[in-house]
Image 1: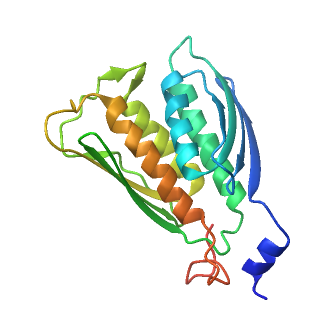
Image 2: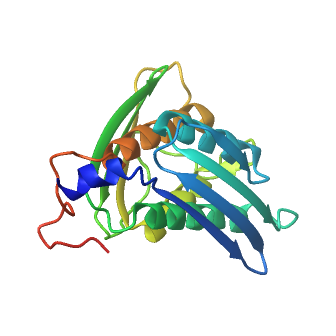
Length: 217
């Protein structure tokens, strides 16, 4: 019997916990990749909590995350470090990546917004910003969260997880203002959850690591 079937036979869960403390933040996060979409998230940034709740629910991950940061200064350090810890806990839970599908893609609409998210769990991190078909209002803030905060979060997440992440957002028509980042980012986080669920899923035909190199690190 191949190793993947042995994995299920032994009922090994892909779980991990990461604790990170700096002079700016203290963050604890636990993850069960093979979960049911349960989220207990408190970053101190309400908008980010909401987005991560959507990501967790649609990705069917169980995530428990508590962050304490220097929010009296601003949200920059907390937002960045949450991305770091979330990336680390995914990489840790995936282990040697044995049997995963590795690639994932999902497209999610919301009103006249269409968000396409593609991931490759390659061990080679890459993220070059959210691509849009409109001029982003960089300074636009919604619920204390701005476009550059989202870019910074995803950059931190991909660097630590070793994921190649491409996000494309298209606004069709005129019903949604491009600067309404809540309406634009919500389908992004939903699509990330769905695509990462695909990529982390076990392919029963795959007997080893999904790379011709024989390793993903």
